[in-house]
Figure 1 (tube, rainbow, N blue to C red):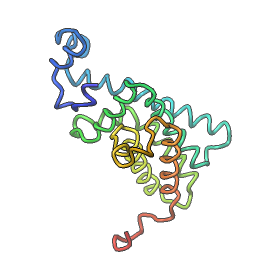
Figure 2: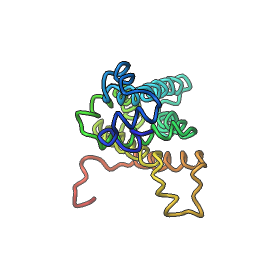
Figure 3: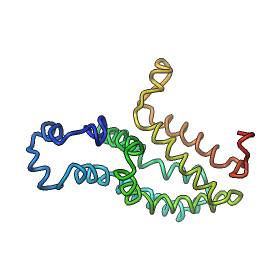
Length: 200
């Protein structure tokens, strides 16, 4: 949770050891460095998410739903949404969102290691489901989908601030439906890389 709240640079080994109730030497023994601990913290859940996404896609294929865009988006997002059920899961989502603001030498290889395989599989599936789009357009929309869910699911509390009387942060079903609806509409748009900046 400390990494999630303070980021990599803002977290010290001393803070981690005090929070965990262990010595810094013990952390170094098992993880070798702060980056080793950070990597393990991120990858432990990230690999589970990626594996779940791959299994979800396999299930869609077995059920004949691999060209259903909404089903593909839900299959991609569900493992992340499931994390919101626990405080540790929500902390990981904050860490995940924060990783995209960390220096590339810290974050790039971790994201590739964790998510490249599953993301490429979903890009190919979405390309099959949306044949009117060029592959680069599908890749762009996948990138924007990831940005959308990271913001929506990472406990920014923005909706609570804007609509405190109407928004229920515990209503995971409503959250999922709103995110899926928004993403599916964007994915299916006929606009492509050929749209000029004057028309945007």
